[in-house]
Amino acid sequence: MRIILAVGILFSLSGCIFNRIVRTNDITYQSATSGLTGQKLDIYAPRKSTSPKPVIIFIHGGNWNSGQKSTYQFLGKRFAHKGVVTVIIDYPLSPAATYDEMAKASAQSVNWVRQNISSYGGDTSRVFVSGHSAGGHLAALIAMDPRYFDALLLTKPIAGAVLIDAAGLDMYQYLLEMKYPATNTYIKTFTNDPATWKQASPRYYLNTETPPLLIYQGRKTYPSIEKGTKVFMKDLRAIRPDAHFKIQKGKKHIPMITQFFFPWNPLYHEIISFMESSGAELPSK
Image 1: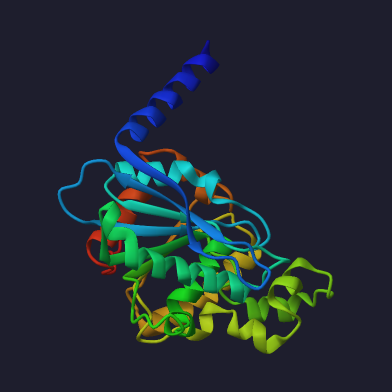
Image 2 (image 1 turned 90 degrees about the vertical axis):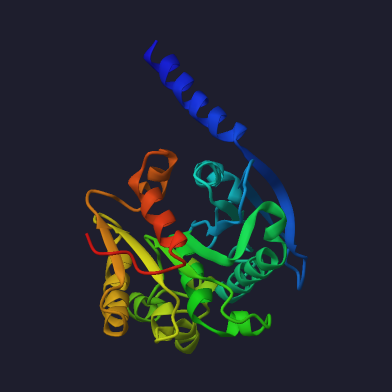
């Protein structure tokens, strides 16, 4: 009986959310090129909107070699239910693609959104990127390395970034220390060249032009993420002493994203407040 009741409650929540949003699946934002398949995105938008809404583009995690947008339907529904146009993307994965091709695809999704999202009720002046784990790395990289948007002739196309237990913020130091063999998945993704590792590390692009960031880390996350986030935050706070960073007590890496299944999670309010203020840093708590 308890199981049936729980399923019923979850079904009711999902149904309520779904009925108040419009979902559009499998829109191609990047055509197949250079042996890579075409990439698609899903859009979740409030059904009734009297004014343009902020937009969040979510990039999934999965160690750069796995994961798919359909897993994160719950995130799209929850955000849309709260008045945010939500775009969840797929991107090419390792070993078929390098981190650079993943980042280029992620940047292309921003380009598509800027050109088309107004048709779904989105505000093109308030487009944010977000990601968990490897997706957090890609969100941070395209937000900070100007090459990706310069190649698309886009000038400051995002209003800010939300990083959720992001991996790879300093991939350079991590790979130097680990000394992985050529067969390792990270070497296939980031190559065996230390200069490339540095290019792939968001930490080394921090400067006064870095867009506003909202950063979350789990207290019990992987040591590599904890270490990379620590040095990243040290460099960021040298530029922006009031940068918003929150460590979530008791949270491991995977629960840092699965917590968003619950629509009452307070992080929704924090993220939306960040977005509604057009990327202004949130006050410290």
